[in-house]
Length: 265
Image (cartoon, one colour):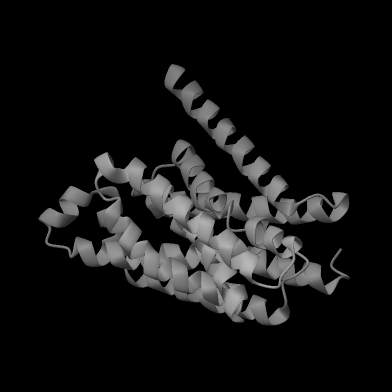
């Protein structure tokens, strides 16, 4: 399997994607922003399609759209009473824009499929290097603001009472989330990147409780999912996204069952 260059590139890229998604996913779940990762994935589809239309890389277009939109969408949907309506409105708009941009470009429908659901064949050495740089940037941001971000994510009221700049922390987190969506979409696609940004972190909460352990378990589950998914995709020639999402869903329900079993015993 590693005799093929595209598989070596895919494994390197997926490793950085899994680490980034695993770390950020813990904060996504703790801040109850799973909905936002889903919305940003659809915005990312429009951004990638726009990049194709104007002749820049899909990754650059995705970063542009998600970075600009994340703060606006996060503010728009900060109130739970408006959250459901805002999700539906924004998602519908950007899915429509993504389809429009692709139809106006000269790319085939198979290219649209790669953007939506990921591809392990099309990733190049240059794109792997870009992903690695972006992943390191995200991880460094998390490390720099780790204590404050953890405090704000797990005890927002306490963080405000302690005088932390919670609004600034929210903006910083939204930027890291936008970058994570753009990074993860390169392997699992824009439509299912939220799987890696939500399920490993949610599963970890059923198994452990301290933040360092949550991050370790979440990253471990993300890595296991993408590595196993890539291997099975190579063996079967089935879509890698199917195996990754199936693994994460199965592990999630196993974690939930374990949590319920502990509560009953």
